[in-house]
Length: 126
Image (cartoon, rainbow, N blue to C red; front, side, top):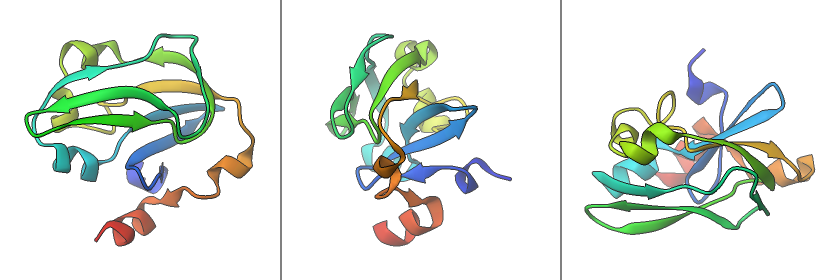
């Protein structure tokens, strides 16, 4: 099963992958394509809590700077130090190696209602 069969995507192009009650958050392949070559990413501090829709990170590419939004409310458990040092990893592999943060979800499941399965997300952005 590929990772895209297991993720949920937001309309702002973040993805969410649940594993053992922990959620991995990253940017979709579509978002990475739109940004182009990524040169910098600023990630949050571990322990910080965010509400759904709040900006938790910023990303800069040769084309633009963008904010990254929390797809569900949660507390940061882990950040991907590797991409902080080498943001170009996102251009190579935004799912396996290029995840951004891992969170403990603090909101309820109703926050998942507006997230789309990857296939539906792809249809929506075409």
